[in-house]
Length: 435
Ligand code: SF4
Image 1 (cartoon, helix red, strand yellow):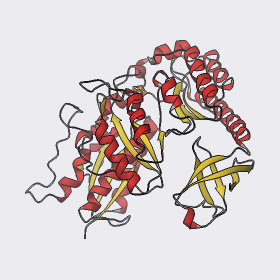
Image 2 (tube, rainbow, N blue to C red):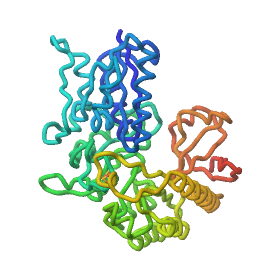
Image 3 (tube, rainbow, N blue to C red):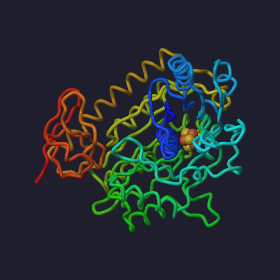
């Protein structure tokens, strides 16, 4: 029996794709094994220069630990900088994004050249990024991912992703429903809907559709208990989508929104299609309709030319809004993007200090949000793995709080009513199961 090991870097879309490759190999009789695998696959990330560097480190480490294995490298870093990858010795195959999903097929085919995938530039007219996975991808977690869209047409000036993944393409609506039904039937209670730019869902169809239309249909059909959007751009949230996260509907009341900057001048330079007032109105609309919704925000700090005042504009905007948590990313110039050439650059120390300020704000926001949720009855999905430190059950609420509970393993994977009751300085929340 052949064994494989996959190491994944980067986003949920990459994780979903790795899980899909893994289940393809398992369906064909291969088994997962961390050490001395016959084949190792590294699914790389390029979103920041740090992620690219970590991808190369991961490849080197995996080669050291599996000297006999066939080594396959794929993912965004492989796609955007194949020359950097090729400098690493002992890589057997570099696989481009559109062939990623065929890896299992190629590894198990019996032809003369079992691995004839050509590495080439991304071309979405050439293959369907949803064809590779015939079955829903369940992964190893309690909650499953489903990629409904890939690629991006936005070309924000700092972002390498459209160069890695090509134009936006969407999974046909019937396929989305089929995958969700399969997941629901196999006992999955929550599916996280992912995409590189999920708000573009359906715009590439001959008869255009939209994310709202898709979600409305899923809400009507109820193939799974609940659905979470992994991320949505500010301009693509609308009242219809927000209302689908209201009581009795399928969507979790949790929105993760890439703001990047709260300064209009920087937003223009980033080529982001909104301004701070638009963002403010949108967050306030979510809060008015769903007062307990979790609202997470991505920020990109230290974009070239960002002044102290412009950074403060971002800080003050977030401070003034009912946001529950932040993801703080330092700007990292990506070769091949316009912002790589923008000057003056913000020096590293300033970026570091601004990020530290933003992370302090993140803690304040998290505390405020947890405080607002204490003693509020909520629904939580109990995760299959208990909390490592306390051994208690870990439940994730619809608005994205993690609450520790007392209870036995028979509750894993179940949706329960719970009440968050107390939290400590590290924001560990403990609660009780509600009658
Ligand atoms: S919307 Fe902008 S940041 Fe997001 S993937 Fe597309 S180009 Fe990148």
